[in-house]
Length: 314
Image 1 (tube, rainbow, N blue to C red):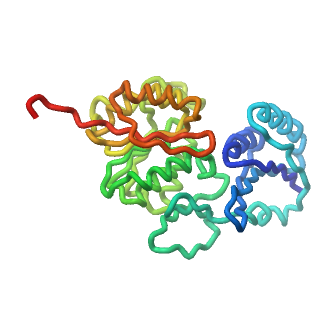
Image 2: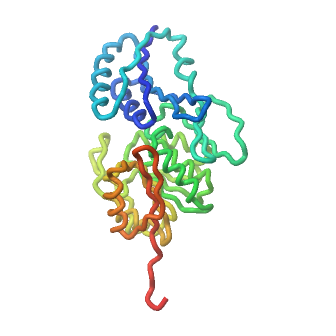
Image 3: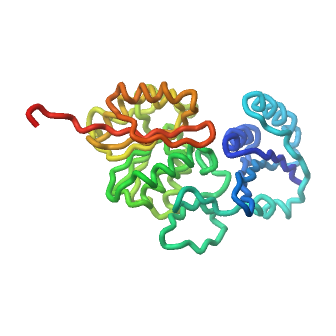
């Protein structure tokens, strides 16, 4: 049997959007590969999907969808070629290399061997895994910020866990316990598998919930339960991680503050530079003080602290 390979070369900023597009048109999914040059430079990122011959008619739909996506972000035309079935298994794995982020984090595909040093934090995630692979600048920003701000024993809340990459990193960096939330049932399944693969499932609790009321998903006819930030979870967390849309962060600012213990930190990402001031104002209005800004290309991550409440006569 022959397979049609569709490949788009892009950067980490667009890779996950193309990955999601491929997943809509091909039930076999898509993969993301990253090739690092020998000298310091940005990596070459390719997003690939493979269509069986009987599904090759979907090519025109994919090309049209890529054209529309290209109106929002520059994307080259896809490269298309036929592969023999026997070649497919090795072709899509051939260019994957461990991905290094920050000072200690390494993201490694399951079939790769790696002689890690004692100080490295190795996270095993198969390439192409949806909802956060480490390629997008916002994911890198929040991981780099996490390295600087987490403390041993911290109680961590990961909102919108996706692949679970942030929760895994927090657990591997010494968090006392981690609560990971997502509203998407598929994401929860993926995260659970990744927690087990990385041996941190005993230290991470997984819950289908949103930070604020009213969240809906395609696979649920009822609103997803909201984390009880003003009840049992009030003031429960030393560190909150949230890599999501800027408007969602701003809308959730009061709930973020309510979840944090006095002196606790929120690290939020998924923010374009043009959206930064809007998010800053929302966080500050909720009683959080911005203590650090991390930037990469057009993306920003903010670190905000919940100040210790002053007491009269103190």
